[in-house]
Length: 412
Ligand code: GDP
Image 1 (tube, protein in one colour):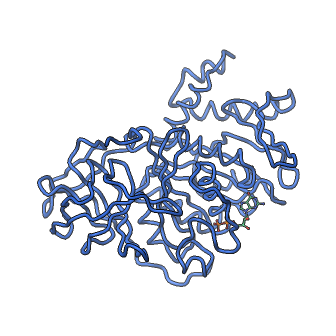
Image 2 (image 1 turned 120 degrees about the vertical axis):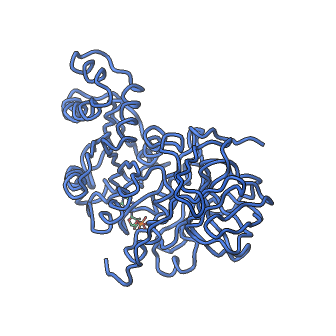
Image 3 (image 1 turned 180 degrees about the vertical axis):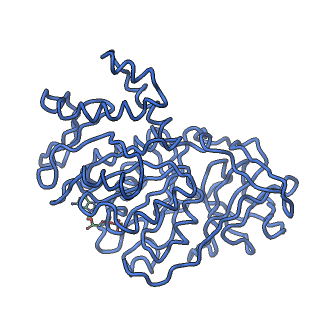
């Protein structure tokens, strides 16, 4: 069976956040809107979908990486959970290494907190393109422009809003989408909160215009024609703006910033749209590099099902039903269940048992994991985090992960 989603329609992303910024809530909403879960869990009781490990439930924080596959607008989005607690920096490094893009999630009240900075720097180290989401715009004390300033000043990112809020805190009314130049408003009725896209009033247009200009100027470096059109007051196609933002984000020239509230559905749907529109697919990032075993010869593996198989084990977990699970990211070729693969780090051949695509609340047994996919394998007794799995006839050792020593017991 062929792959369901072409590589261009795959996204491997992580959500980086300081504890309490709303990562669990946002992830839950993502899974809800992408149809993988049908019940929104209550975060406080520790029953959130991603937090399925007992220890996490006891401590109420996400400490282990989990990979979850979901589908949005006919794209396969693999969400790799990056823990937000400072004790678990090693886990964060492991998961960041295999991402193609990330969402930096911030609380509109708390802003950029120390842990956000740590994780941000790690993402920088691995050249992971990022978009930001300023969450909790509905909370009293929310201040989007202050958080924007912090992202610029503390994190040093060229943060460019793609949306700005209309009022904040208890009066939060909605957002202005600066790409489409429309007003996204939330309407409350007894059945729930509904978003509506409306043309901007003259007043809102006036408020939005400097930020629209800021956006077009920020992407001028990758699309000068767009800027010229803007200056000449010529009509600008939304897709043209999106393409320029994508290019500028991929080359990390800009860091797009969205805002909203995990409690209001449109914000999360726009965030998912942004993942698809602006974050790279495995085809858009540099190919995986490694060496031949015991040699310095550089080997490059392009992201293609046709290339020799290579994958990196990035996490080992124990599942009460199936035992030891090795999470892998496939960089090239296809991993087939029941096949023999070569652990080039250990110099050992191993037989792959069952393969799984992981969802938040269930494991889907699959025959193959294709290039760009993230999944889990059983039957690899000697494989540990950081090992490369590959085709024995065409071995490669992917760049090893340079893990720092774990930081123990640091209070946040
Ligand atoms: P995590 O630690 O980052 O996973 O954060 P949680 O998702 O557990 O959220 C922390 C708290 O913030 C919870 O009480 C959530 O209900 C609340 N929260 C999350 N998102 C929002 C939001 O958009 N608005 C408001 N007002 N509260 C939120």
